[in-house]
Amino acid sequence: MTYVVVARYRTKEGEENTVLPLLDTMAAASREEPGNLAYRVHQGTEDPRAIVLYEEYASEADFTAHCATPHFQEIVLGRVVPLLESRDVLRCAPRPEAVA
Amino acid sequence: MTYVVVARYRTKEGEENTVLPLLDTMAAASREEPGNLAYRVHQGTEDPRAIVLYEEYASEADFTAHCATPHFQEIVLGRVVPLLESRDVLRCAPRPEAVA
Image (tube, rainbow over all chains, first blue to last red; front, side, top):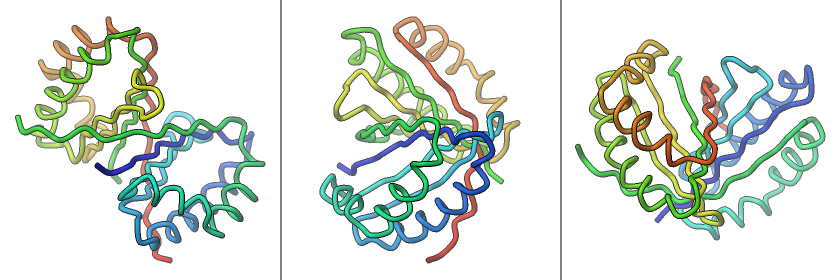
């Protein structure tokens, strides 16, 4: 079973144009990690300050390793989180995909 | 540009085991729609009542068509929503994926 993390951010006013390129860099670096299966950044269509990160890892241990990487520490914790109004991270398991 | 919808639900107490199989059926039917690119159901690992739907459509019009389908009307609106404590739906656009 893979391990999915869905993070919902809302940036402080006017900060989305600083945060989004940082997350693009973060996404590219994260996709290079051996245990990463997906890392997608999304911007709200109705609320441009709303951001969703959809991340998938081969295991929970791979997510733990992700959180210890220099790019997570420097970009997410160091530069993005101070520019956020809210941050919510849900750890979850994808359901097996049945066929209709 | 594709059109992504991230829905976050929290079921009423004890209803997750009724809601999740309904969403599995919904997911299978939705993946058969011509404009659907992805429909994944996730259950929170720390909070089993937390559910995330990650849906991707070729266009916003395909999502609009999705909302008019019998399976959306009957399963989501008719059977799932009454069993939810909270429901939040974010419409968003995925960012282009840069390479590290």
